[in-house]
Length: 246
Ligand code: BTN
Image (cartoon, rainbow, N blue to C red; front, top):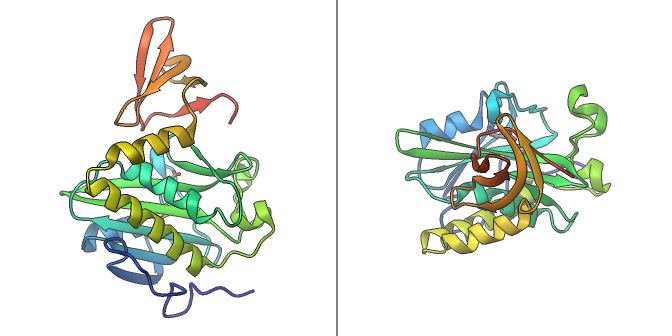
């Protein structure tokens, strides 16, 4: 079934948001929607692309951006916004709720059935911030890079349901807008607690390059406080961590 993203109006019904989606720009192809968002800016501007030639993920990885298969988009903010890394995965989780019970994996991956279908990359340049979100939507297993097939999925591969990308984009932006408004009105703690609860890292055994132990708590920056034989160690959002049982 065709979906709505390729049409001139990429969003199925008008967006009813205050900040996110103040302007929506759709490209057939771009290098990375994060680069466009950081270059163009404008509070709440959304850049969407059918495909990216240099889509990137965390830790310098590339983000597979097959045309017509996924949602690749970024939202620009003109001042730094604490808690964006928590709001974004929660918005995706809530937007896919009609299809599946998705889970958030620390720090901000979103999974269905233990497999990743969404990643979030937040970057800042000269006071401007971009939150980039990549979602695998229509992919079948064979559309995913071979090396990812064991760990990755798409909404349709995981659920068998048809998911319209235009509607999904509208719903993610709507949920993101709601949380951005909460944060901007002093509700950071609410969004942080929701995220910390959703990613369920506390009590889990973790391993990263420099330590191993059980997560005791998560601080306001999203860093894990890990109890190790050498005492508590702070593991930052940027570090690669294996969480036991995920
Ligand atoms: C990750 O899990 O490593 C983060 C992946 C983020 C991918 C998205 S796709 C839209 C935006 N543009 C990019 O170049 N990256 C993000």
